[in-house]
Every structure is written in C-alpha cells, then in structure tokens.
Image 1 (cartoon, rainbow, N blue to C red):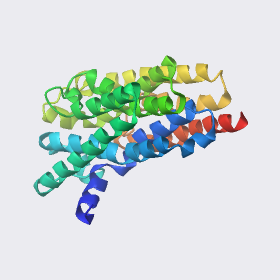
Image 2 (image 1 turned 135 degrees about the vertical axis):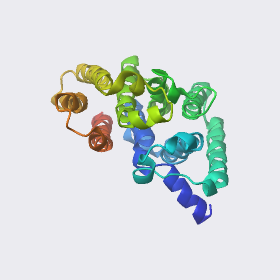
Image 3 (image 1 turned 180 degrees about the vertical axis):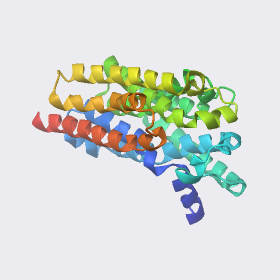
Image 4 (image 1 turned 135 degrees about the horizontal axis):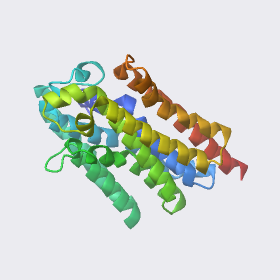
Length: 284
C-alpha cells in the first residue's frame, strides 16, 4: 500500500479505538479457549489482525464518508479525530473497497455460525452510519446497534471453543456498549441538534441520558460481580457507574474531559479479564 494511502488508513481507523474491536476479540477468545497454546492457532492470528486494523478502517471509513455533512458542526473532528477533506474522497473509497475485500475473504475460513457472526458485524458496522437504515439517527437503535463492538468477542469465543458464549456475557456486553455509546453522545447533543440528528441523547437530554447510562452500567456491575461470585477484583467494575453518578452529583464536571478517560479504563479492566482468563487455562 502506498505511504499516502497507509497514512490515510491510519488516521481514518482511529487508532485509540482499535482496542474496542481488537481487545474485545482477544478477551472473548481467551474466555473461550481451554489452553494458552490456542494463541498460536492461525485463525486466531488472522482475526487478531483483522479486528485491530481492517475492521476499524471499515467502521470509521463508512462513518466518515456518510457523516461529512453533519461533521462540519462538530469541532471534535479537528481535535480528537481526523476530518476527511474533499481531496480524500477517492482514496477513502479505495480503502473501504480494500477493507471490504479483506472482510469478504474471511468468510472462506469460517463455518456457517462464524460467517453469520461476521456478517452481523459488517451489517451493523455499515448501516450504523449508512442510509437507508442509518441506525445512529434512530433513538434506541443508535446505542443498540453498537453491538457491533460485542460481536468480535462473540466470534473470538466461538473460534476458541466451538460454542457461543453464555447469554449472561452477551447481555453484559450489550449493557456496556449501550452505556458507552450514550455516554459518548452526550457531549455531541448541541452539535447533533444543529445537524438535525435525533439521537437518544438529543431526545433525552443530558441528565436523563446520564441516568440511563447509570442504569446500564449498574446492570453491568451487578452481572459481573454476580458471575464472579463476589470476587474482590470484580468490584473494580463499579468504576463504570461512578462516571455518570459523579457527573450527576457534580454538574460542573465536564463530560467532554471525563469521557476520554474511558478508553484507559476499558483497556485496563479488559486486560485484567484477559490475564485472569489466560491464567485459568495455565492453571488447568
């Protein structure tokens, strides 16, 4: 790939968010495997690369392409994310074609269940931003369609174990991504309103959105602590409901600033789950 295209692919794929697909895949795989030697399986390595780079290029490339009109209201694109220009248009379409081709090629190494999971990931990734469905502008479907970030973990678990993960884990994943999406949409309420986008956060407003985030993350915490049998380390999950609770109790706190701590929390706690899952297989 020419350096110019590689540079654009790096910026569009939003490196700081790679962990949300790649990390979820790794944790799901670790929870499903029965031996650490499974990390040497060629399929694991193949999808490890896919969910870290091409998958994110597809998600955010589609998002950037279809959000060009609404992004002009959002200054975040000039600070935290790359704002594509008219000159990037042709190159971005080429990168999306490449990411799509890589995605399609992966169907040849998956069975029917694995293929269905990958198809659901691509469907949600594309139609989150693209018309005619454009889930991101439909209240409730906007955060629900972010199950796309849970699917890599489900696929990882399936590749490692040959079975789908327990329903409780899937529900925990849904509660977390729903809260994450809604929490991230709160700082954009003013800009989304100006762009005419009716997101859940726009409909509910700041306070009620924070209350819903609190409910989602409280449910996540209850599930995790219960599944862990009240293990002391599981109490760390309480940091998630602490985010919206703190903002509700102290309205002077800036959610724009608080939000950017979440990737570090997700990485740290995800890494802990990965470590414990891997340690479990070594112990056996």
